[in-house]
Length: 172
Image (cartoon, rainbow, N blue to C red; front, side, top):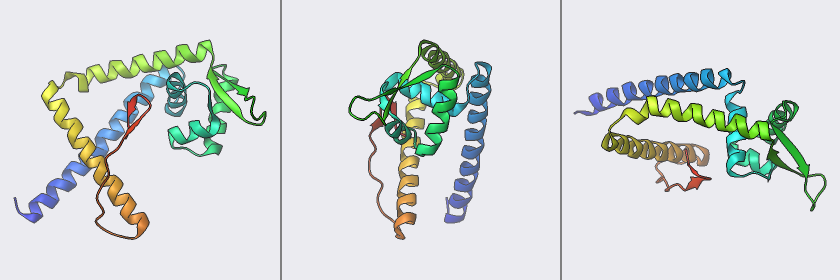
């Protein structure tokens, strides 16, 4: 394959990937809407199943959102009776975030919906192809991270570093 063909293939794969991401987001959004949750609300609830009692600041870091965004999300979730803020003993101005019983139930429903979607899609791939797909995703993620880091540093061509995990979920 010559350079031009390789470039054309990369462009075609890029746009297929973007369309797939959009379709997946729509599928998740539609399913979560059925149980009265948005994707960001689901992210908060499912993250709290892994790390209940975290501060708003730590929750914002885990979800890659601003403190202002997490505050508004938590306000809405608290108004819906799905989470509660508890003052910390060390500093009464800080709050630890906890799921309520209905919040835990909503998180479990959301996780089950996502597991069903995974079973209907990726779960149908043979294990060897799924492992190859995962390896390609990780390689692509590392290239995107390196490209982003280069752009922010004003340089070109740095190597991607291996990633760790975030909670019990693989890092993106």
